[in-house]
Image (tube, rainbow, N blue to C red; front, side):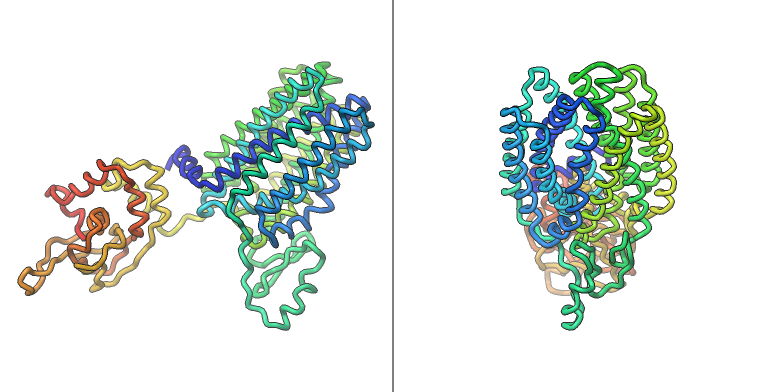
Length: 574
């Protein structure tokens, strides 16, 4: 199935589409706010070290609160966690607007920005756990993450561009007000989504074991194993032994270096724009927009790459792009070169982000995603804060070339180590029937139907092994399923009109189908189908089959006409 068809099917998922649309609006507002905040701090202080301190201070809540925030995401309705976070941040944005309008000093502004970050801390584990729960199966993890990242980076283009226009007019206050409005809008959308509580952990423990659960769980926010599972240590915390700890360690290694590098780049953009390229606020907006463009291209590229069965090479490509572009950015002497390097760095970062997220979702069950997300957010925040704080200092001492050059080389080396730890954990294991289902999708009976419809139906086919002599459908019974023969031979018969021995009409074999006539006509089975050898069928529920065919008369008539044409008569009855 093609990339376009995959994503068309994905966006038929109403709750997921509404969630992504709402967050897209919110992300645009976030970038208005972040660009305005960075420019405001640097305009008031003119010191890159102070800029780094403020940027790092905004990350302290993520370090301190991400683990308990993850526990909240696994305990309460994740939709309501997101809603509360958005409303609280909207209030913070209005306070910031008032402070800026009144000419307040930078320190109360920084304090409110840190408070807003506290509420943001609860957003990320909740959204990270909610998105994979809205897809139909784990094969859609990658496409959902790619769609999420694409919209995120489109906002990265629009947000800084709009911020540049506002800053050119000297209107910082409006940037904060618009962000408040975006949070309010997404809160309304979240209210319309169905409630979602995390999947319950399996419970097989005794009453005595339950009584000691709190002690076993350890510190608040720890990721406890299910009572019936042994646990192993991961970053000093117990996780179920069934979760691939090596893969998670590899992701953490790559996360740490990626967030260190990209955090430093993000905070140094304003220094490059002002002190190196002498472009002022406008150049800051351009560089951020270039990052957004590169990220969008990376997210779109990931749309195809995450559908590949092996994800290790995708991680290597992403790390090479981010690390190499970081080195180039350190030695760039012209704004045009820096714009290209920033775009390529962002492209690599997004390939890494989507791929890493997909790997984590595949190895972590729903019941633990919030807490593992909190642990990962803590690691990411420590790394980003380190890059935000340390790289400006290194730049001041040794220059851009040394600071970003060493960072890029270290990132590429770390990616090799991480890929070795992750191994095949992120790969999609081929299902036992994948090849059979791909062949079934090409059968003439599905001609005239869109690939997206066929793909969606294939997800619902169930394998049905049969032994010789099994009556699969019986004449006169209600029509409830559609069948495709994958292996074996089957005999179609009808009862004699006089009540004597039934008449064998035909034999069916591999790739023949039966059962659609009764479903399309909404009539009882018109024949009996019996297995004459051991075999394997794929069965599709009647309602799913009718959804596949849809209301289009032409398709229905073509399928019913199969029974009138001798050339295709073996398509079956029943």
